[in-house]
Image (spheres, rainbow, N blue to C red):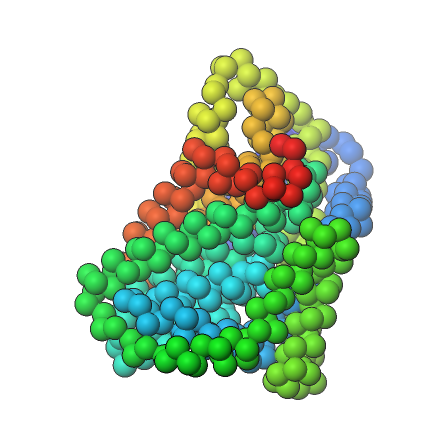
Length: 431
């Protein structure tokens, strides 16, 4: 490690410890590195702009953000919730199951865990806590755990980021997330039923089966959005970025014209909100790519590859080591930083050990989603606390079993790669 890189890391960690945004800390660290090396400081800005300009695939990020915000602004979330209540609300722990199933459906439209928690997650949590049906802490813990499904099931903003740094197909990454997302949902539903018995939650009044067709019909325009989105990608009609633009336009049409639930003023507010959120993500991506340039200049990924090759690790052992590292980092860093800065360090070793990069990417995204609910950083914990006023200590009281379930799913995905790769191979993936 050179002196310049050591000072760069010192600047990054020092600023992060002082509370500076990670993106800003990475940019300052890059400037420190260039200054010590005697390079042109303008190189940092050049790398930022060039990386974003060349990353056509990154256009999908603001478009998916816009689609999710429009869905949340209209009555789409409420209609999806009504359909889920009729479908699974009758079972023991019914509203908990509604929470999970609605997250699975909304995941096919948003690609964002925060959008899921802030939209349909907040609504169903209010239903769960009404009249003291469920403890607030349990409802909040279930909401943040189910929101992690959002970026696993396609479309997925984190998978778009991973595709950028790994040069893998976004389409195959999206397909690889389908079975893992459903696996996580199934495990959460099993846990929810057990917890409903333990908490002595009274069964919900069942919605008559005769109501299900009507509610399904009302939610149908939203339910077919994932079909349109993924059908375009896998049918070869659109690129993922073009599919994201179609998703945003479709969300606008059904919210504003079909459901008539979005005024011009509300639409303007959602565009402003989407622009702010996309800009925040863009700054993180740009600054992370600058840091990747520095890491590549120091040849750190190649050094790690040689190190692990000399140790002669089994691929599974390497995967488990990486997962432990990522779980630890997830407590301290946001998912975007881990995907864009940390994961590229391991890619050369994955190639050397014969680890499939689609499998590795999906596993890494699931790992990063666990980081969203693990303190002290856990972004989803802060989001749901701010939106619902539930004290963090109440959420942490019930959070442990949910984290254990997610880690169990992560372990299964590591041990059984076919859980990730089966569906992509059905569509022609050769990995």
